[in-house]
Length: 222
Image (tube, helix red, strand yellow):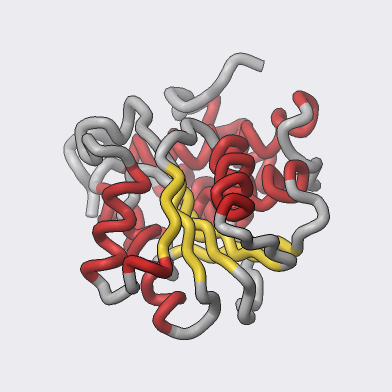
């Protein structure tokens, strides 16, 4: 699908696909103590978390997230609250879900979820982070920095890149988000927010090319 907002070129598609693939950790999933669903604009996070709960991978699920400028209109009561309601609709028992409704960034998602778990008497040794597909690597790097004594696994909705583009319906926005998340993977370790990860040369070249092409709305000052 090519929408009216911006038809990306084939070269831009291939560059974005390189970054998309890099963002995903491709972890082999196994049972863990708890999963944390990271709030965002993407309700698919809650859908995937519910599916993984039903498969028996974990007994407790935390949804974390307040609101941001990209989610306030869609989730007026907060990301975590809407995610919880959606998971319950999909069959997750309400008593299996803990709510963290205040986080406004990934670091807070981790630290505030730890506090919610501690208050419930849960001290996990292995945690599964469920996120948007292109947020796996950044959430992993953040959690490894802030929660180093816990094993971190990552999962997301198993969508192909083209299918994700179609589900969002705005190619420019998706490429902006891919570029913005990669910038954070690169820059946040310097700020002490995340562990450092090696970015392959072809991925870095694709990132720089897309910045030159103007996919910059999600960049931070660095």
